[in-house]
Image (cartoon, rainbow, N blue to C red):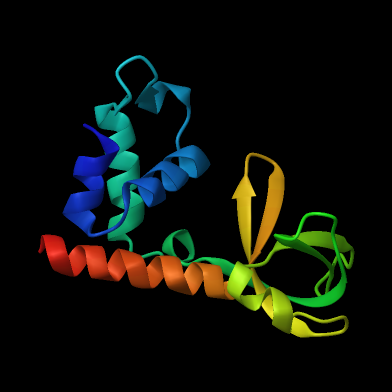
Amino acid sequence: MKQSELAKKYGITPQKVGQIRKKHCNESDFCETTKELTPEGVKKIQDLLEENDDSVLQPKFVRVQALSPTPNDNFYYCKLLEKPVRKVRVAIPATHRGSIRPNLVFKAQVIEKGDEKFYRHEIIYKREFDRQERIKKVYS
């Protein structure tokens, strides 16, 4: 079964199904050549989605404090205000570049890819979520 078919069934995006698959399934649950989920993989994902486990679907947000701009205008160095406290690079939307200043505290979404963590301003997630909601309304 394709990830898009499973996503349509549960009203989520195929990317979200892919994230759940990468986090909770192993190599035998997904066929790389056909890009389809095996029946065991489909069963695992369905079990997770039917448990109504909100931690699977909800994004994680952390508080960060702006430190200084990076050489790339799309990012800003920030201090993570949760343990372990460290310096991270946060993606900032073009519309908010002018309003970010040192010592400003805001929320950032944590995106885990493999064993790396990436951070982005929470407004980026809100815009993407609103866009997905509009797409659902058009196709339903």
